[in-house]
Image 1 (cartoon, rainbow, N blue to C red):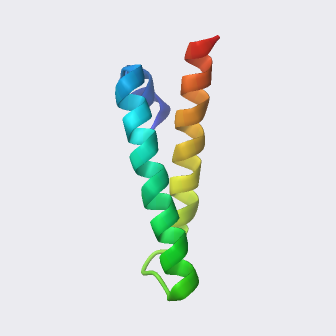
Image 2 (cartoon, one colour):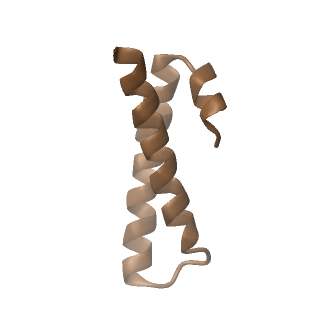
Length: 62
């Protein structure tokens, strides 16, 4: 997702999306350590999306 989408979300929506994405990220990491996953680069994209969401939330706190 792009930063533009995160900027349009409310704080509550963004926090919920962040929580859900972190849960998905942990599941992907576990699955990748146990067996191969179909698209390993998806882990990298998910991690970057988490960073984008955290950055947007921190911008709003300032």
